[in-house]
Image 1 (tube, protein in one colour):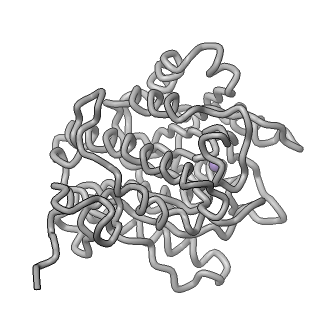
Image 2 (cartoon, protein in one colour):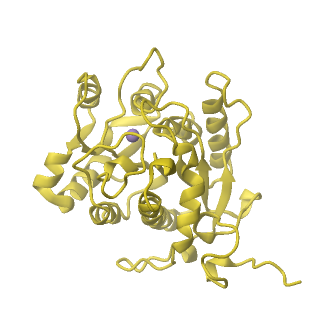
Image 3 (tube, rainbow, N blue to C red):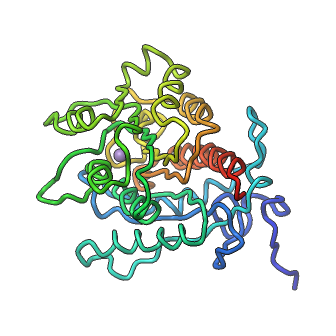
Length: 320
Ligand SMILES: [Mn+2]
């Protein structure tokens, strides 16, 4: 019997073959030989509208089988720069136990930080970014944040809960994980029933670029504004797939018309190269509402763009 292939990044087997890990990277249980970890966070217990993002990681893994190595614009090959592996999913044992699932996510990412692994995560609903930041930042200095989304996700609460997918970045500021003055929210749009999310973002010092400003000034100036806002310090990147227009990402819980094209999103992400990213996530892909894997295909492609950013930042670090 032939031995199973151990080096799928060399594309030794057709891309539709074998078990679909993220981007066909090896599945690693030993994190000591991993620089960048691809991680699934299959949790969607805190959504206000359509659930389904719990199925995001599996479908993103599937569509990411199409990933190739060398970026066609920057010529960056993240797989040459860093040791990249699929670390599997965050495991849950307290899924229905209060905030147990969020604690389990935070514990997982605290171990990721201890292991010196740079995480690229696939949600899950946007709630998961809060426990990811808790684990990753811990008691350390607040990080900068680039947040691409249709919504600010800075509500105070919903139905009496402080922890749901409309609140993570308000909590992250309150908990000292994120520096609001080094935070930019890009692509915000759509009506709200209360202005409190927008108000909180602006009053806390975040730079909020509503979609109209992005359209008026263009992607290049949006990039410049993002780079200016976060500066040279440690920064986290969070990308909500509902920042894309529903034409490009129908499979999501809270679709909002008037969003980015996939090409604009790629250009935007590419323009952030060279910033000191400590990790990133792509959230809110909900396969039950997807059509012909449009959303998962976009999500997998954007994860590759983010991977290139993380690998470039990793390479620039003195410890790399
Ligand atoms: Mn969001």
